[in-house]
Image (tube, rainbow, N blue to C red):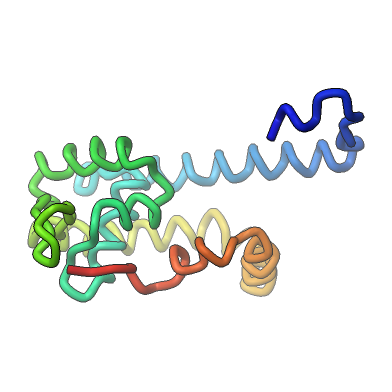
Length: 170
């Protein structure tokens, strides 16, 4: 795709567009960092934001388990990165990895009792942070408007990843 632009004039961003782009990048990165730090710095929790999201996705599934490939897509991780993250969580007893019951080949991540207990402790901390860093500065109307605008960027194939269902289950 990048090679298609060779020899063609690039439609550079004007100053306002550059500022908007940089604001978006800075703000989203800073927001994710702040949300993650809130969870990591609480000694009772000590979870990264991706680890928290994994626990949430597993808890929302029908049987507390999700195929690793589906989970990677839901939390926007490569399969390799998800495997490493889940391995760390498995060492802490928060999740387990098992063979898929449906086909015996695939792997599923399973929420453990310890993982559910930690999620129950972490959720109020996370929700307070979301309110502090997003809802309070924006207000509810602007927050929902932001979601409406960002929704324009979500592809049809990714839409299920932002819904509350956890995808294919075992």
